[in-house]
Length: 461
Image (cartoon, rainbow, N blue to C red; front, side, top):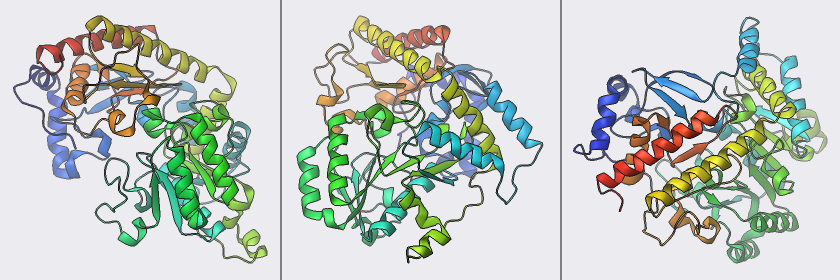
């Protein structure tokens, strides 16, 4: 976790002076919530921001400070905050009821749109979150194959349930984190991203016991540690050969990398796909989609006809009408407009502009990413790199994945916030279709100012 940055830091002092209301909110939150937050990624010292409203690409904190936002609802808001078409649909549905405890027409329309955009979605099962979706996908794979083990890539995030609680930011050896049963952890096998030889060797040794392989298809944390497309294709070939269910976790990449997700961009058809975030237009909601024969294990009649026991699945907020309304509005916009293309173009321009700043300031950093992703590599190990010769695919996980609590990252985030830009904590952010020219210019100038502030504190050379 993020350690408290030095209190004598001018960067920290400037942030504290600018955000007294957020500090007061955090003091109250620490009495209510573990760590004073409700999501690990929001934890930052001396205190996180307390936001009161958001619109488009901007948000405002309790002190009235305005920010260009790159947190993006943790990646859920590709159309930006409070898109008028989405909020209108939700408002309309709110007057009709928030929960029916019954089937409704909106869930049918929502699923039809998913099938229209994601060709592998032969059937759909809604959940309340991405974590629930990955949990259900893995249960389906185990039930279908009768096998125990799961294959994961080190560093890939698939929610916080027990199967996924290690090998992301720690415990890369597969040992369990606190509260996870050792017997459960023993059924997870880990392989390094992009290590084809290691992947094949592991599958040759244990493939007959592996029910599913799950991955973020563009690389962990939306490409911070990017995957080679050839590696993903090899994984598809090897899993198909061995009867292993391939699960694409497209909770982040779905409807962002392309209308049909990363699988469309890669030209690879997984067996199951997990979706959330953009799926529900910024409201809670997730789904498992994929092969009919796998999803039918949730169907009482079809399971009985196959002579197997149905997999039970409840969920009070599955396909909630409000989430369905927001999801339908969002997916229709994605289908019918150039929102994704505009977001990709903005992100590419931002990456190029930030790299220009890095080069002009003479810092051994780089900004990289694909599609809508923006990653600022602060080079904690002092590698001989620059923005024009940086190749993340040539680097390993240990070099690319910046440790949580890195002081340079913390100060960069605070310096950017003081200058009116809120980056995602890795640091960087997903761009949105709401970002425009003024947002780009503000971000570039804030980045330049933050680098100079870091240099004045001798945080960077």
